[in-house]
Length: 308
Image (tube, one colour):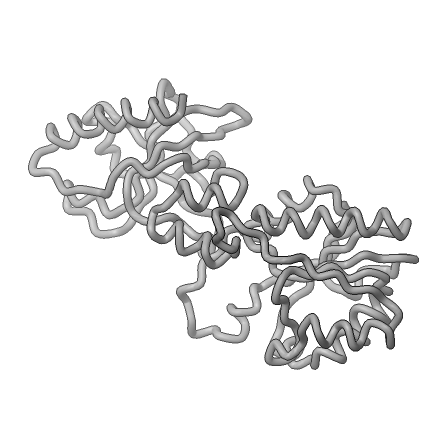
């Protein structure tokens, strides 16, 4: 897969099958669209192009809205898309100027003139252009004028619930890991760097690695205790992770701490990846550290049952 960080970097393919979107999470619904894209490219003996944007349009259009968190960093999304088999990934810088392109200008200037679209694959209820005015119906009107075909993928469902990045974010914000993972088609993960903590976990027999997440906009699931798998230097370990303010020791700042089972190495400043399997319980305040230790022993047993 070739990666371009601006539309102008791409040199037009002879025949191109294109899809457009933010593709946050590269979830199960996205996979259906991507598979259709690759099949469409093969059908016309052409090349598959996925056009996405960074920053996320909402970050640019609503800069005062600081609550949006994404399922993938741009690096994670690029790595995941590279595994799908598409030929070209264009990550175009989204700006207010770009957002002012009308839907017709976008089709004419970008899709037809610049990317030489032959087949356009879009997800259900896709909108584009200034004020999201462009629609499937408009694309069908413009397609004959600019000599390309349009294919809309119907809404994909899991147990009659439409898959969407928003639904996945909502699930994670509520700690509903099982639902989020089912929508995603893989275990939700975060990456970060191991940083210094207060070493309180070591004092009660549960040493933890404190994690600083790579990007501020990466979504961290709801506070609580989770059964997780930890990928470190190419090796995977079982573990349990706490997200929260550590009320038992009167903590205030929210931290992410993972206890890696059967592991005792110095990993400060190392990159670590955490895959979430299940939420075990809410974060709780205990009267004594001994009570917390007893609960952590139970949590570990619970986590091991989940991770078998």
